[in-house]
Image (cartoon, rainbow, N blue to C red; front, side, top):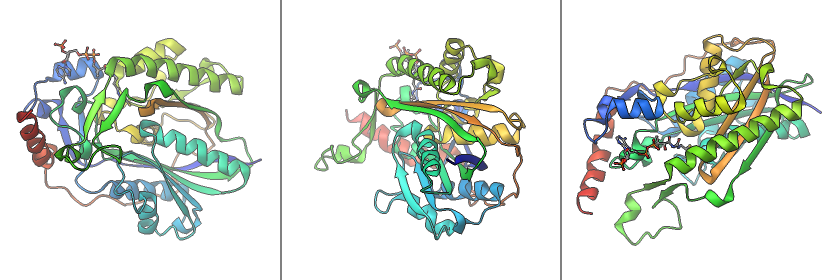
Length: 361
Ligand SMILES: CC(C)(COP(=O)(O)OP(=O)(O)OC[C@H]1O[C@@H](n2cnc3c(N)ncnc32)[C@H](O)[C@@H]1OP(=O)(O)O)[C@@H](O)C(=O)NCCC(=O)NCCS
């Protein structure tokens, strides 16, 4: 059996910033409320298409692995904010990077899209069906946000990350994983007016909205992630003290603190960047992983623990054994086109639309 070593990693974070103070200019909120409830100080707003971020992140990951795109035999793209449903967005990325020999699959499991992708990709490499896989996770969530809802709009941001998985004889990469879904909480995080279950005969279809049971999600997330983390450690026969670094889903600092306490993980061993980007859904883990490597927080041979949850409620954890190399083989200069607008300026037409709708209700 082969293992699926992570040999490349990359991120794409759009340049336009939306701070808590910016949010307070158009909704009743404050930096104090957002910071104390979530740890988030600012987030990024995408000025291009979602696939543009995915393409840049993929190019960085390929360079880090020193691979040509034509060597990739599968692309798995986790997101709920795809460019389009037809064609699938993984095929748009495939075409742009020139991955001529790849199959391309979109995965829609919200915030767990990246970890689900690494789980599926690693399993396919273990069976021998594939040898080099690009797993991408990210989100253009600002596009679907109801900017009149302060309880949800302050939590999210846009970003994308990617990794390359390659077949390895050594026991490296995702060596244990556990994914699942709590079927009785499908409505706890729900984007309504988006999808074929909603009537196209009313104006509502133009206004995706959020149904969000914040406190229920909070409790369930901690329970499910703790269960999944303990399960992967048990599978590998190691204890939490053996884990060198945790790279979790970045939804909320308070969720991270509660999870850390529950599983006995010291806070200084947890990679946190939620203050800079907010919750970027399927983008949080690959972006945090890329930044942990940039910051030299991952050392050769480390055990890296990942944990996540998202709409569904989908959840999962993965234990990664890192290889010898913690630096990229090559560095790509791929970047997004320049942006001459602030986050607030990009969002202005969307905010106006949702405000106008809210005023009529
Ligand atoms: C959303 C969340 C931060 C709210 O924190 P909370 O402590 O539970 O706060 P509550 O929902 O009880 O709201 C408290 C008050 O703040 C108000 N409020 C909500 N959003 C606000 C905002 N952005 N600014 C100011 N006040 C706000 C509410 O209206 C409520 O007011 P009320 O008491 O007068 O009714 C928290 O529930 C959470 O993090 N949940 C998990 C969400 C998540 O991570 N989802 C991602 C899934 S991948």
